[in-house]
Length: 189
Image (tube, rainbow, N blue to C red; front, side, top):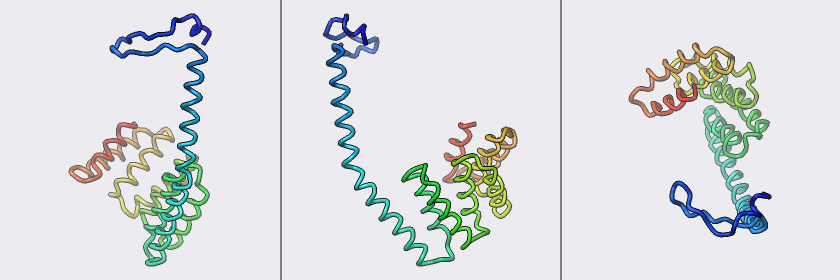
């Protein structure tokens, strides 16, 4: 910042041909503060809307579960919503929702897989591998569970076995709607 005091106010042309203004240190600081305050007030106005949407979404998921308690999917979607859409730190509420889903459908590959994925994303819990293995024993062609299991294997220094699971997922997904999903997963390896 001290060098800014010695530079003439004006502008220069960057290598891309863009005209970039040069400001004094205090002017630059004022512009940064102005931008931060504007951003902060903009974010504050969105918080009540986001909280309202969260409550509505939770109510919808709970209503769908009450309408058909044997179907664990609304609980799985609610738990995923709590961990992804709201806050990755909101694992406690998501975990209790996953446990409720497991009680209603203990052999559901979608519940086991989603819960295992959440456990791995939260803190690389070794129980995640057990959940995903169980899900794949029930439904060995589940593409999302194959990809999640591949991530766990990679994270536990078994990359080659993870790649083999990704290859299985790729073969199953060819020409299907999840083909792009598997390709994106493969890029992470």
